[in-house]
Length: 340
Image (cartoon, rainbow, N blue to C red):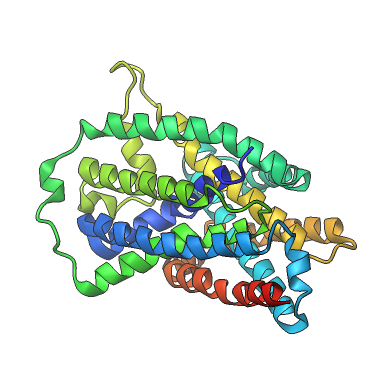
């Protein structure tokens, strides 16, 4: 199985709720123009990740860290911190989405614990198992995305797209930064791949295009004014879908693609933490970290909209600069490795 299939889910995962809402908040109906430019910048960032994957020549990051004590330690710490930030983000998104729409009366602990156990179990099985799960899920996800786009296209209103190019240069720039950062930051986790990075760029582009298509569908069906009201506009717009014009409430089936994105990303984040921690006692330490994550998500972010809003507004800057910043220490280690 190709590890590259994982990239499709990583690219999409942070857009649920936070990412798509940010795009509309910044530029309204014109946000997909900034998203297109952001995709191009994300391709450049992903290219550098692929370069690092190729140059480490199928070796684990542990060996790369050993090439330089100082920069190796910096790279290891950064990978651990970024992996944990990604994990917290996807857990907050998962809980917020699940509690808001799918399991409204279920306590957050009961939502998080089985999810983390399943993700942790898959992560401990290694990249091969994660890749198999991602390959199976990717087929279903793409089919659901295509059906959703085709189904929602009949609800488009031309007036929702007019007039075009009304956003300011600053809002356009924010859109570019947001899309590039949110789509590429989780792909930092691909540095654990031991292949040549083949197919990563293609899957990144496919994943990013599905997000842009969803943005177009949301704007075309709802309009920018309604989009700004809803917390999860991508779920609200799916409520308009019907099967054979009489089977309703199908939005829960279509929304499974977002849960898949979060699950694969959470699994990869846990796998990254496992590989980043010292080998001795890393399983015990990791499960302790996961238990602590449940407490953090439940007590600090659970139904605390002030803290969630802080995550919401810090996401574009944090994602963009961390996505770029992670390139430098690993590029240094790869270059040093090549010269030795």
